[in-house]
Figure 1 (cartoon, rainbow, N blue to C red):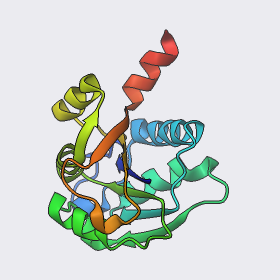
Figure 2: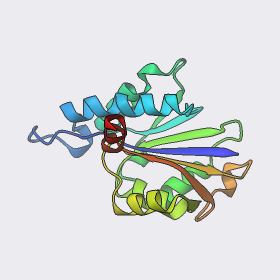
Figure 3: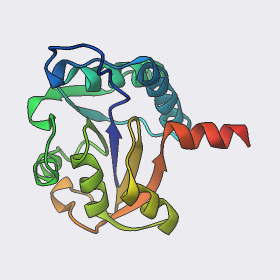
Length: 176
């Protein structure tokens, strides 16, 4: 079985003027949310073998803050092609993942990540699927599993949605 985690970058700042979109850093809310999501993944036993991360400042900061508790930190590749990538491009990249990797994480951007996740889901909790279809907010995490031994076999409607979590969902659950 293979596991794919899609992690949207945390909330970024729009305060800096004259800064390229790819250079926008996280704001205070984003800096607080990223480690919460990293802790969630760790508690679920979901530490990736390989992380593919967009080269934007906000995705790099999200990964750095989220992976602080992971020991050892997973192997990471920063790839410019993941910056605002389309679902088809992400699928092509995932299919090139070596078979030694059993859990792959992509840290990236919307709308591509949300569309990619929805396209991959073949089964899972209908309520979570509906929530994900409506919105993949910043710092949102989607975890899919595939009954496959090769990343080359990953494709539309072949995944099972195992987790969809957001900072808001986690804070609501903690308050109960």
